[in-house]
Length: 352
Image: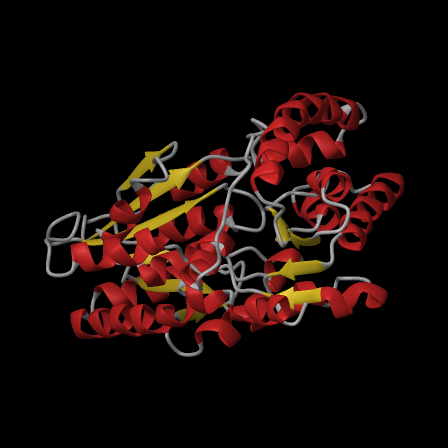
């Protein structure tokens, strides 16, 4: 999203990208295990050997003014600093290794937490500009480094807005039934068990149909708690290119319902994306989400399946209210198009 936003603002952006081949969950799991660091370094060595060649070619064409190290770049920022020692380095520090490991139940011992905090601090120190997604995450940056931190909302990329336009006036998925969608990694931050329990409380008469997309550590528990409620379609995943259209064809999107400390500090990408796709949003009542969306989405207490089920039923039984909530979410999402979201970063770069 950062690269898309900077392109929209007139920056010339070249990408040197070699996928590590590990999901976020796999990276966190490796960091939290005894032998994980060694295995992670092995993966990095292979990726870096190819990345060095790609980046060197880019540097020969024209030395960049800025190098942006993407999401989960805790290690990559070291390579960026070595290859571009006099260039401004921007680190997209969307997640902190220490808090994410705690949230997912790994790396919670004293020694592991010290190592993960060292990893976070080292990455933040090496970069010239540290991008975080909320003020709550900015507050986690060590005070001595906080002056370098810039808050850039996650926002939603162009295809989500395009999907909303394409779906406008089209028949909704599920026909007469009100359709609900959740997509995510089924982690404690997502509150997948709470969402599953809420589905179990929804009417089973087919008036509400739910699509649950994704997988993760709490998937089994979520499926178990959803039994006996609204009809559910469980999808392991949907291709990223197809996901915006799938979401835009639904009526209501569920954000997060986690009651963890980390869950209270984020505005999840799915909330931005569901709003940009033009559907109503129900999510947990947290300060950063209220600050971002105000009254444009519906909030319920984190970890409360009854409250989530009640909010969905209320929207499903009132077509006028549902239409108004869709319009409100879509309007609020305009503030989080890529070009708008990167405004603070653009301002910081302009004074370097």
